[in-house]
Length: 139
Image 1: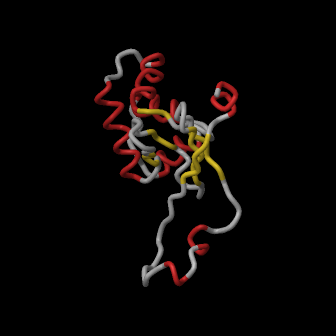
Image 2 (image 1 turned 45 degrees about the horizontal axis):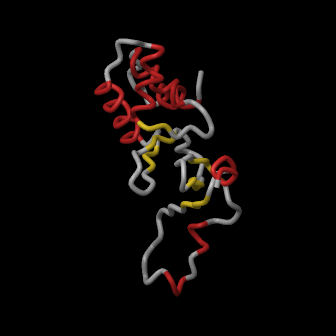
């Protein structure tokens, strides 16, 4: 059973066939699929699953805090099941590929007090941008 499925079951989330297949599609370390990509993969396993069911299921998983919604520039939102391990994202500016990265240090404490302007920092989102190897080679 995937880590995401285990976490959802641990929360007592009712596991229908449709919810299960969406969770299974999202399983993996560097998975950052759009809702349409999730639907296409889910429909390959469960042909009767609707696009609306996929969108609703993704929304529920985000609301539960079990999946992160990732928005990069003007591209479609992507869904990251790696919600419980602190990480940042590395994004290819050409093809949009996203990878999870785990830089050393703690971004919550790396901002100097003089740059906090009295804020209490509770969360940090850092996005590294560049070109993936395939796009860099083609350029």
